Length: 331
Image 1 (cartoon, rainbow, N blue to C red):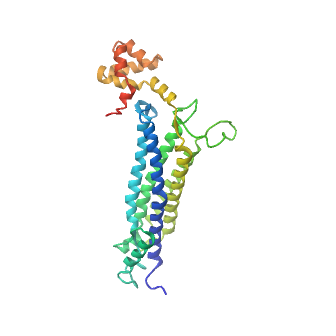
Image 2 (image 1 turned 135 degrees about the horizontal axis):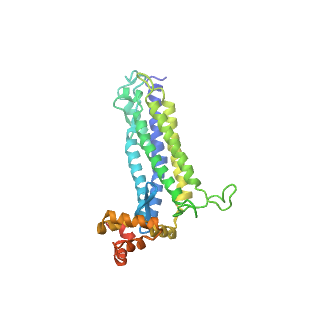
Image 3 (image 1 turned 135 degrees about the vertical axis):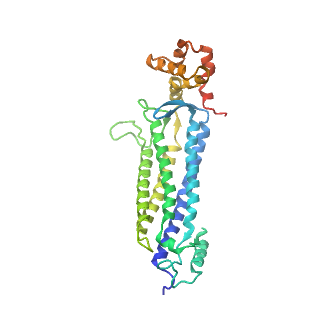
């Protein structure tokens, strides 16, 4: 009964159909939903000043909205990367039959199948121009999963930022408040653990491992056929499902209920020594550094140390040190 198909071209065709459908129907919608929540939070906290941090050390101020805008942009870029790379999954191996020559299939068989698939799915599948490539290489899936893995890396970054900024509430940073999804820890009443952050970072770790598996598998097989197809598509679909589910849970149970602790943010801004950076244009780097070091060594406020140095008057300090202006919010 079967004259025009081989498992060598139908299986990779099914892989591409499954992978593309999963990305478009599971992952892309969740990326959009998470970005919308981040946009709302960005706008809500656009002018709320907080201290920045680099190298785990105090840095110059920014606003919480600006910080969240970086997360929002991660989701926008991830959607672009994944959507654009996924276009390569629309190319199908069907019509190559056993080794890519198309033996026993008519010349237009692959094109006809692709048209039927487009009619059934609504996705513009097309027959691969080189069937030898389509049977022996899975670089398309590896390439798309690279974009998926990049999303996992960004999600790892966001989840870690949230759980560290919400650490405490009294012995950590405590700038953010996360929803209390569980009634305390197993032994400590009232403790709020960042379980959604931890879950998402574990998902990201799994996806990174899957990416290694896919890359190794894509390099295998011999001559006209890569026979590592099952492990490639298994890991690809698992990554997409885990990320979509993980993002949905993180968004609903953590991100939507995320709140700023403005009092803590203001206190940390007021105590920060890195506001001294705003004095650089007026008194120079060396004098500003001396003020910061004196304030730290003698447990003084930055203003006290600046006035004591004789380099700055109280009036000049109040004029030059404006945390909101330092965020360059208007510029």
